[in-house]
Image 1 (cartoon, rainbow over the protein chains, first blue to last red):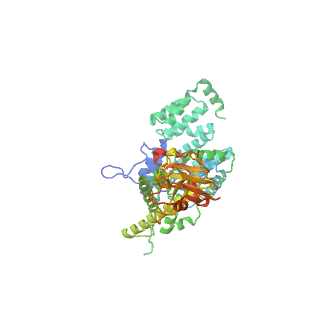
Image 2: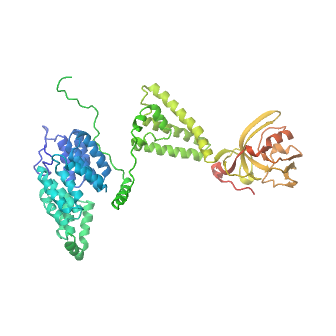
Image 3: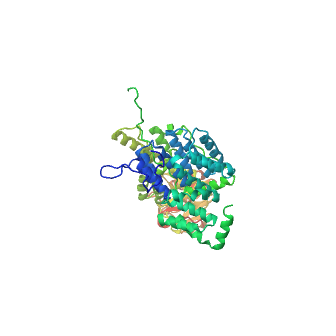
Length: 256
Length: 315
């Protein structure tokens, strides 16, 4: 199975194995799809649990380990993400993906020196993979924006069937560090790739709001349709009610 | 084994990731902010390599578990016994609160039981297979921990400069009766008339019968004074003392005219004694105590609970 081969999680891309009665076989692929679905729904805790279940079914499943570490980073548990990357590298020694996750965890935990060392190590491997390039983007984005942005096409080009997810992640990284116009390029495509993903709509809405676009409200409403009562989306939606002046200034100065 | 055989580890791989406790989140956030602000924070020291092998035998675990939870701490397993630890702490506090009454004995026993259980959870029984061996070892361990508490707690109090003991005198003016439990300070105290002091008493009374006891007694006469017992009152240098503050014990009343001159290092104390037939020699032997025999000055009345509080200074 290729990773992220079935990211159209409610569409026909994923054909689960079935027993005679029609019940899905609960193997690592099944839980992996559930985890991806949870992640795209913005439910990181649930995604983490599903990744763990996938690993319970098959502890050699690389995508499960990678997913767990990504979810720990999403949950801002950076120290645990580092520990778990080390644990994964006992099974997959010096794997560039886990090195890059360690780089991201260190960077977000304000350990910049260590982060750059891990990233250098990951990029130095053969076929570092899209996540290593995305990590590189994140590390360089503040000090060398131009080089950082050149890392994203590299990540997308080597992503293969994961390209849609990598574009979404690239957009999220750019948005996180305030490059709204650049992130809009990626996030505007995200709802096309994942029309039923709450997080894709949320991130697009955030980007639109920061750029002062009135469509932000629609994006958040769409997000809330997909995941009602999501407090993050409700908060973002309430921020859209700032009035004409707020939108005006955000439209003209938000993208700077 | 044939060529091409794949050797697979039978040890299950841990697939549940570690999680951050919620209370750590603001602390980590603060530290992150400080790092972003350019502050160089010291890195927490990692556990030395020798710790894990050192905690691999039952004896070492039992030794480390003298302090409950210490054996779990370096392995990061303290969370698994945290409720036991809290229960142990609560029981220890309750033991102290009710000391030396019978409920305190119950809480004390329960605290030791939980202490032993914490040691068991740390792997103290790893070297012992079989129910009987384990029971014997647990019993020995409980006995060792009991002795440690029994001798360690008084030692700790002494190090802290505190000593407990029973009152040997009735003092209605201070609401103190014989048998009540008091605490005294063992350092930086000066003895004056009316103070209660802890001392060892050993006297040949009651037709040669030896009385040995220790406890808090009342100081009546100071060094160099002339003390007289007459008409159920104490007289110091010819001046009568207040009978409410300095009551003459019943056994001392039977001596009609008792007079003594205290030496330069001698104090006259009173305590309740049972028995009859005391003479002036017995009184001198028992009630005149040199200053070096005093170990503490009472400052706190601990039991009974209704009278708990600090003891008022002497009038």
